[in-house]
Amino acid sequence: MDILFQDWINLILRWAHLITGIAWIGSSFYFVWLDLSLRKRPDMDEGVYGEAWMVHGGGFYHVNKWMVAPKSMPADLHWFKYEAYFTWLTGFALLVTMYYWSAESYLIDPSVLALTKMDAILIGLGSLFAGWVIYDILCKSAIGKSTGKLAVALFILIMVAAYFFTHVFSGRGAFIHVGAMIGTIMAANVFRIIIPNQKKVVASLMAGEKPDPALGLQAKQRSTHNNYLTLPVLLMMISNHYSMLFSHDQSWLIVGLILIIGGLVRHFFNTRNAGGTGKAIVWQLPAAGVGMAVLAMFASYDPNAVKLADEDIITADHALAIVQTRCTACHSQNPRDEGFDEAPAGVMFDDLAQIEANAQRVLAQAVIGRAMPLGNITEMTDEERAQLGQWIRAGMPE
Image 1 (cartoon, rainbow, N blue to C red):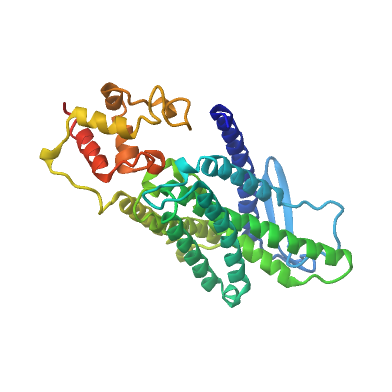
Image 2 (cartoon, rainbow, N blue to C red):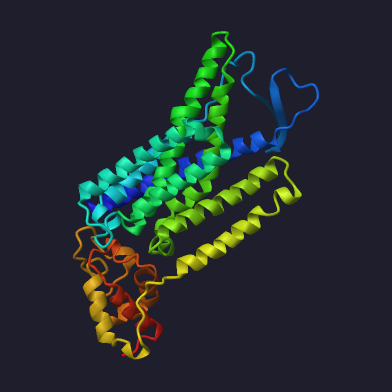
């Protein structure tokens, strides 16, 4: 595939993914807020669980919720499903065009596990399917009857997946697959449970039958899961821009911290929207703040980093040799890597002046973050990273 054409496909899909994702998240957050904001008032119609009054855009809105369904169906009924479907479809297309098409650069890291391109792709696809199947089984099992036990089981499932991915794929590829697995679970909840259950309720009403209230409860359970998973999965999907997250030797633990922090923030808003005050909401955001501090300290600490003595600072010529050996396959006026027609982001290391001009990028991406070279395709060693970092921090002496 032509590189420029692939870039345009990537851009179009990424934009579409953002648009549909915003639509899905927006409607999801709105309905969870609405559900938690409903209040019981005198003189409500029979079967109405609660109502909410809202003002927006110069108009007033009055919304009622039936716990099961109203006695009759209106002529026009709005369904909220295509936002979820197209968010998953565009996200999966992005996964294919970036991580599967260029698996040798973005998905495979020989220092983690030597995989063929096809093996890596099959593992990735299989994990998305397996994640949904295991999650669905948990929800339908005895564990699913307890909100607390199911939450713990889901957390363990994602952590096991994160540990597996980080020991199979590159750090970048591992994080994106954790996010893709969670996103698949969320979209499948809509496609396999929420919408089918709603259709069964509508069909019962049309047939003059009383709908099964268990259908609504099951859909509600899955919708709540989607709500709490949204904030963590958002960070997972942009994690490829932040190497300090995915490059850590124990990055699967970082996944756990992200899940906890995102869940706490979401729980704060849900509790407040439900009318919680005082002790009910005072602890979530401070706890999330502490979690962020722990995350930052943990991600910044590398016990396995190679330590060098001050007298071991390399020369500028040595630094140039390392960079040109490990980095100019891509970052050169004439890249040798077939995946690039020109240097990524216009960054080139063809001479010492160019290296010095981009020294902070080298420090962040190759030394601290270890995100470069992509997939460590040139097999840059930890000692070389340490030597470059020491040379840059010492002021890049001759």
